[in-house]
Length: 522
Image (tube, one colour):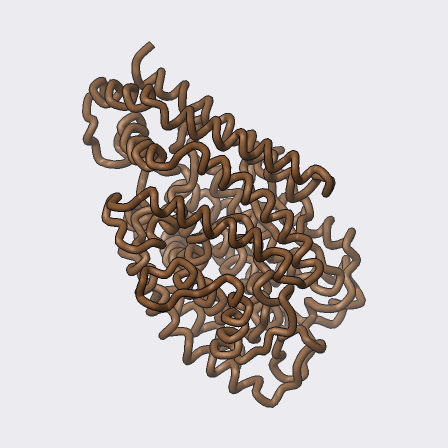
């Protein structure tokens, strides 16, 4: 057996263990009985330790060197040769992984699982103190993890190793600059929206939502859960997934996860009084699932069959949620179905009203319910708090016991809202409880990339809006599969954008898109 074949087999076994862990994580968040939490955390910790030890082994390094020597062109341009790409990408992975002790990896996996379970109870009780000790443990472990990379590949900020886990090639300073550009473009739009609703009454007591004028929102009302389930499943079934390659389940915090080729697990959250929650979160997660199901089958069971960056991954979910599902062509086709299923709520609703309500600009407390214009301010708040938690010595540190106060202050300053309780404040997201520090800024990066990809797809497809209005989602799906999905980790985000006709990373397409939405809302 050649060295490259041996390497592929070794990596395939490690990948199989990763997919098994993914299945356990999916089950933990959807099907597992509450009493199974302690055992599940140990199972995930064991798998993390075994995978880490297998990958960090000296034999993997030997196989990488031998495989590199076998290649006709080991320095081939990215995307030119699968084996050269595999050796290049895995070599960096291996160098990184060897810096982290396997015991630390196991502890991190255990703490992540325990923390997520504690978060569910803390959020239910709206009591930050129930999560605090678990969050302190996660931060301690994240700091130990970051310390493993002192002097590695131009890491200059304690946050760099954490961000690199989700967004390789993106430094803390570059991300800070990018989000700063986005913030500067958004501030006038948010001020405009604030002025428009300054005379409006608050929404339901304590929900932190400002409604423009007194007009009712047609997506809020009384929507039986079973009818929502059927509608959402029908809509996801029309998206360009491989037949029989997905399933949809309810969860507290929506996510998507891929167990293997042909096995994409999607989730959403159903609220009886808010149809938009299930509808748009399902379209969002389906975008993630399409990305992973669209990767080249030749990459299966290799580390190349993964997302290269979460920013690129998030661009797919945001594109399907916001540019497609909240767009006029999609909503006009959706309206007759809403009238059929929810006659009382949509019998007199016009296409223009549905479009307005699906794109309503309103300052709100909950990130996953936020409109497109204010959404990135939610991300900026989290990013700034993370930088304070992992202070680089500049004096802006933040004690975890003070996190709710700092959170609430920023919501007052950035969105003009008072946070009524922890559940609608610092406990609303699952990420920190699962140790996912460095994750949040990739959401805004995804919005930026989605804006660029949408313009490129419109330009190349030509009649994209007409196709969507006719129910043809395959044209967009095929374009994204060809230009983004199939590459896996073979190309960097910058290379993918360049080859898709997007040019360099730029916030302007997103800001233009949001300015148009803000103008339409006036």
